[in-house]
Amino acid sequence: MTQASAIRKPGTPLRKRHRFNSRMTRIVLLISFLFFFGRLIYSSIGAWHHHQDKVQQQQTQQQSSLSISPADRE
Image (cartoon, rainbow, N blue to C red; front, side):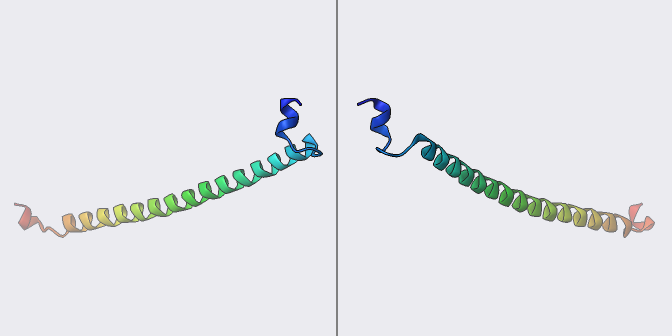
């Protein structure tokens, strides 16, 4: 008995095993893509909130610098 025949089940052709491996590869790639897509959405939402906070902070700084009258600066 050779090592190759001991590994695979008797009566199952190699092509069928290859087809199963290809299917599993597709499933793993699909799950990986879903994780990647989810992380992309999560990070883009976080970046948008961070951007909005920075814009709001800059606007409040500009308003506070404009609200100082010339008499207060001297």
